[in-house]
Image 1 (cartoon, rainbow, N blue to C red):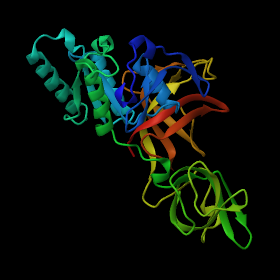
Image 2 (tube, one colour; image 1 turned 135 degrees about the vertical axis):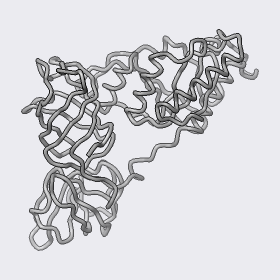
Image 3 (tube, helix red, strand yellow; image 1 turned 180 degrees about the vertical axis):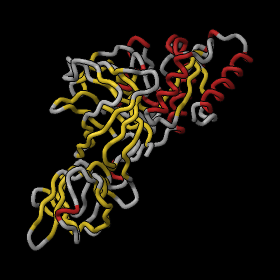
Image 4 (cartoon, rainbow, N blue to C red; image 1 turned 120 degrees about the vertical axis):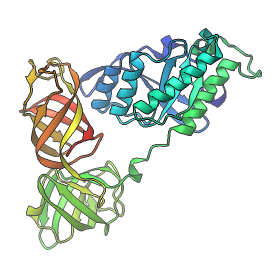
Length: 364
């Protein structure tokens, strides 16, 4: 009604068709809504395991979250699971909606719920002063004011929720506003000019003359300048995200750089060889392994253009990983690569992709 938002029933939102993301089946529903300030995509999965799978395969990355709590029951095991998930996938900002307040007759109970939520947020590393909105989705749907009449109490609380989302969840940086990053796909020499590296620009912008840092693949970090940039033999004044560009590097020899290294804004990314990751093991039907793998499994890890061997360490008490499993584990690479938290990767065995992962914590 106001704020361009529509009130929708749960069964309209919760229809989660089986979708295909890069050949991997994911159950997820996406709905959109608008406020006066923004356009939102709301991602709703039947289970948090579906969201992890969705996030790992690159099909979704949330900028913020709405944690829904039953005000008549307080925190549940699922509440704690969802907070842990939000932290794992890099969601830092939350707005809390305490639902079903129509079932609570005691105002003191609502105050207890509020304090309980604050304690829980603090425990899981979130801002304990994150906005909390009390309401009832069911009652909001039952309110049906005429077009010119003011919203009822429960619908006005939904409007308050969208206002808090606008205020509390920051506008994400556009790819162009992030520090420059390109992974080298190929290297060649132009006689009389120097060494050229090519690759797809992941983020940020670059102007010829800018300084860059080249690092990763076990080689010494290099600082240099990009003297010119081209795409399909056309000179570029500005290199932007998603372009497959060729960069001419000042004073660099062919043997100093190789495929898999990162060309980046100086100081914006570092090399690492050990990290925690959330991993999804593809099923046989998705092209993955036919059988489980164990502690010490040594596949290939593909980060953008980098291809590196590494060893998997399973969490305590976990002996094997079966196709279709979703779990947190530790990876140690044989040499450092330029990655960061939320970098995604593929796990390969020969020519077969057997898993997908996302870095959740850098260790070394």
